[in-house]
View 1 (cartoon, helix red, strand yellow):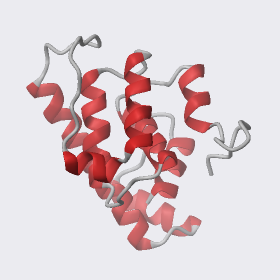
View 2 (tube, helix red, strand yellow):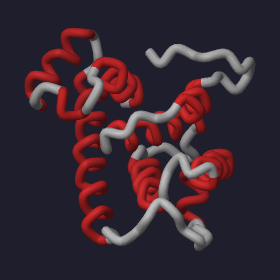
View 3 (cartoon, rainbow, N blue to C red):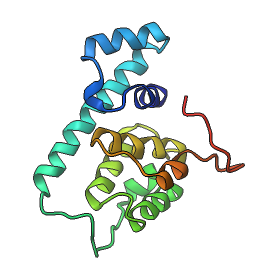
Length: 158
């Protein structure tokens, strides 16, 4: 699923530039992605759009600045893991994501179906949340999202 998501990010500047679901499925199949992975990725993206709309409608007054502290439930800690939670907190404290985006990232990480989710996959989730909202990550966040932790060299997205 994550390979499909990264491919979509690399190929389409904006989510609205993607072809309709049927055409996109055919294109992804032709490239060599498995049908199950395509289905998971497109379902995950559909749920991302629904979650974004739900949070935007429920919390329209929420700003990019919050003075509260996010307490994670035990299930969230188990699924997301300590390194990923620390990364989310880093992004929020650096004002690279706002509290609503944080909640969307957490919800989508829980929906990924992996426990614990790897930090690399969480970084893809963050990128996809920003991409789905039409926000281009600045240079600092982009470097942070795609530097290989072992040798601090940029890794290939795809």
